Length: 147
Image (cartoon, rainbow, N blue to C red; front, side):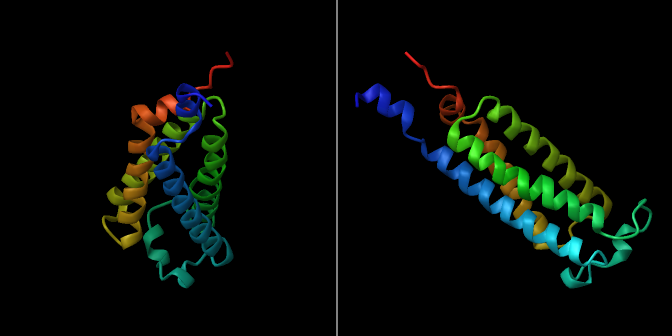
């Protein structure tokens, strides 16, 4: 294998970091989502229903579904997309990062700081966007030349 081909097929460190970030985000989303779906009262996670006062929600079922799908399954699907370098993976990464930023901003505006998981999720979101914006990641995600 010549040096150019090897460079195009070896994942940069930033891509490995992005994959690790997505796995951690996905596992956390699955965990939180499943717990909220199984116990929409939030009691099993120590989250009081009073957090929903003033919102059109009576329990944590819908937030649980969001966590499961958007913060759980989507990042894990993106692991596969990054690994296989599927078309438009970079756009999907940035879209997920934007959705997570909005979700986190909403949490902080509505409730302020409530739990360490907010900081952990914020760091993972920053990692997703940061590693995704690096030139090495963007270059690697471009479709490989077939020539």
